Length: 260
Image (tube, rainbow, N blue to C red):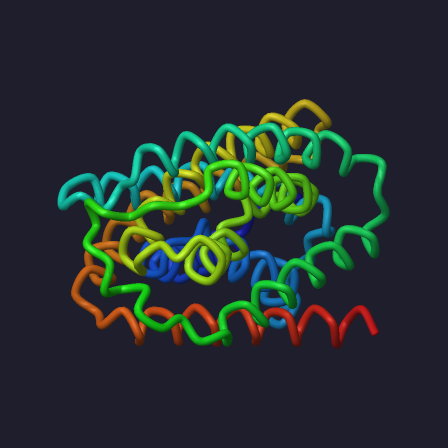
């Protein structure tokens, strides 16, 4: 694929916008960048990526976007190490299996999995989360076995689409495990980083990564993700939940319109 200047600028802006938002709300950004990479270049008369190429680029980009977000949240007690290790190990296993197995799936199959994940996440984000932010960060408790089981399932599905799964982890942590919003955002970025290792290895070993666009997205991510994370610390937690809910719902609708 020939990379003209307009193409490079378009991919960089997709990476920058997606990573800024992802750093702010605690996701790897594939929920935003997957549809943008799929649909934005053709709008400007540029060559379209295939679903396999988009999922490969997304997997690599998420790996670096989450590093920037975690670094910005490293102070303040927001990172729950037990939660990160428990869900991280399970999602790493699942994402590797999903990333490796996606080579055998059709493009419509990949999009269908993505649509199901996005719709599930959207439904959970609109469930009331009463009192979740009243829990002191040093007194947070959760069911470790349930957390690990849910993370394994998320990892398999997310690994298939190169998404790392944070857009599903966040509503699970808020609604099911009752983790406070800012701890959820910070910890989900760390878990997503672990998850993206598995899906990236799966995509790379099966030749699904287009390296030049991936590199451009990585550069944009490393710049934008810490900026988004810094902004997220200052925004009201209810506002952060609404932003994430709207993003996930909009993406779910767009994907399902195309599938159907």
